[in-house]
Length: 280
Image (cartoon, rainbow, N blue to C red):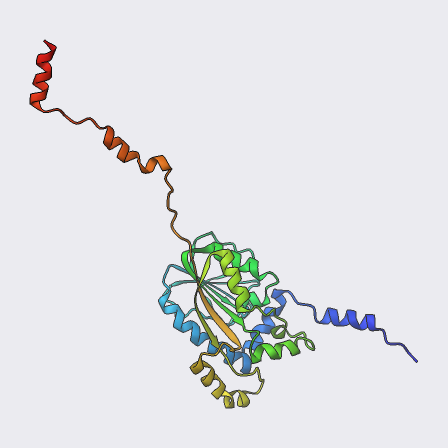
C-alpha cells in the first residue's frame, strides 16, 4: 500500500494559499469588482462615500484603492484629485486626472499636505496595514480627513470568507479581516479621531445577480435598523492635532504684578517743592 506524502501535500497547500503581492492581486480584484457581487458591493460603498465627500473641503485629495478601475471621489468638491496604485494603470478605459505609482506603506508625498485620503480596502490586503495608516496620518494636514473602507469580519460576508479562504487562493477571499475595534485602537496611537461609521452590503456574497436582487430586503432592513453587520464598513476619521499652548514658568505668571508693585509713581508738584526747599 502506497503511503501518502502528507508533508508534500502540506507544502503544496502552503504554496497555493500563500498571500500574493499586491501588484499581482490588483488585476484580479479589479475583475472581481466588475462581477455582480463585487459590482453591487462597490455601488453600496459609493453611495456612502458620496454622502461624506461633499462636506470635506480642501485643495488635495488622494485615493488609494485595490482596484484600478474605480473612481470614488467624483462627488468631492476638491478639484485636485490624485490616485495612487502599486502598479501602472493598464486599463485604458479608465482615465484618471492624475496617477502615482508607489507602495502603499511608503508614500512619496510631503507631510501635512493632503486634505482628504480615501482608502478603498487597502488595509484589508496590505501586508503591513498599520504602517499604511501611519503614512496616511503623516501626509494628512491637521484636521484633515480619511475615509477607510474595509470588510467587516462580523457579517455574512466575513463568515463566508472564513470558509472560502481555506479552499481557494482567489485574492478577494485572501484578505486580513481588520475589526473596527482594532482599527480604533490604531486611531488612538496616531491621534486620529473617529467621526462617523456606516455599514453597508447586508447580503451574502452570492455570485448570482438574480439571487442578489431577491435578497435586497436584507439591505433595506439592515440600513433601517442601523445594524453593525454589514459586509463592509465605511469609517470617517479626522486627524486631531491640537494647537501648541506655550507653558509659562511660575515666575513669569507674576511678572507683571511684581513690576506693577515696583513702579515708581510721580510725586505731586507740592511735595516736589517741599523736598526742594529741604535741600536748602
